[in-house]
Length: 304
Image (cartoon, rainbow, N blue to C red; front, side, top):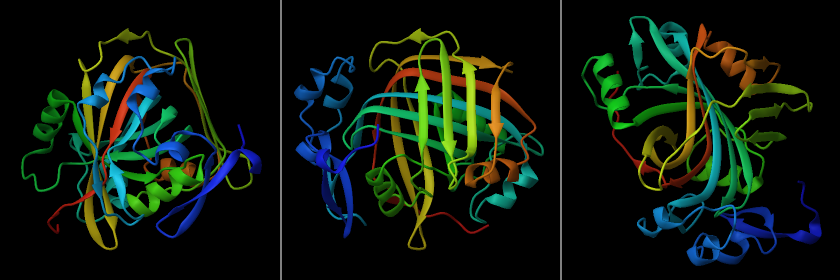
């Protein structure tokens, strides 16, 4: 819901002024959120996952901040698509290589996120990403793929990452190096249906999705924790960003059917088309999870 001037406050992030909800988590705690306060929110199942992840203070492009950024209640949807390696390579920086599932075939993803309870307050997000091989690995691609699936730790490069709030855009773009911009972005995910709509600059459809939510399986907190490492370039230097997801309720469908996916006109649509996707091989929908997003750290990536 759009905020009015009366229920927002201005905050400074590395010299940039953004508005956040008045008396929201960020306004009250500035990333040092009281976990006992969050535990009283009926939308949050537990905060035990976060009690084992102490925060530290770091200097960053957005000034001194605490890391990780905690997301106490999230839901996500991901379409994983086969795409020609040739098209993928054309969109990757020279230093990165696609993760191939077969000769000439890589993986691209279209993702949608809803962050209901978070250190930087509610927002939604979408992404077009490419699965890449871990930096400095010299093994065959399918060995990297098998290791990633076994360890539930994937590596990626993101082409586009629109968000719905200013603070998410500034933190993500300036602090993490992600290609983020603010737009109208609606994401609704429940046990029955998953819908998402991303608007372009003219408030028309960029990308939209509607699909039945796969049957969900519940997991105790901490029993299923996946990881994703994303590579970004900040001021000409490569960095890696680790995110850890505490999966609480999720489901998947292989070779999904009856997906209503609309690729309209806009930055996300252009990125999807540039990858020339062949077909969707998997739909993953998580109706309940938690996330710890760490600040990026420098990494050495060899030239190719």
